[in-house]
Length: 100
Image (cartoon, rainbow, N blue to C red; front, side, top):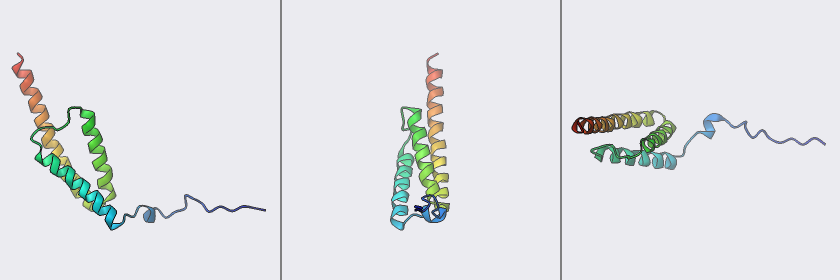
């Protein structure tokens, strides 16, 4: 007797990656909250640069799940991170200059 098991990996890729509207809303809300936190920060909010990398990776992964909408959110995130990196580097430059 031959046993036939359905292929567990034969799922339609598009169907498997489709998010419900509540999932999309949850992801969108989380990304918007992160953007609000970054916009409110006057300086780089992480002591450990690795924490910033983790936040960036998490944001990018979630943004990719939202498609075009996520791409727009990613652009906003990228601009905020650029602004915050500028504050980090300018603070580093000021502290180096003041120690001489």
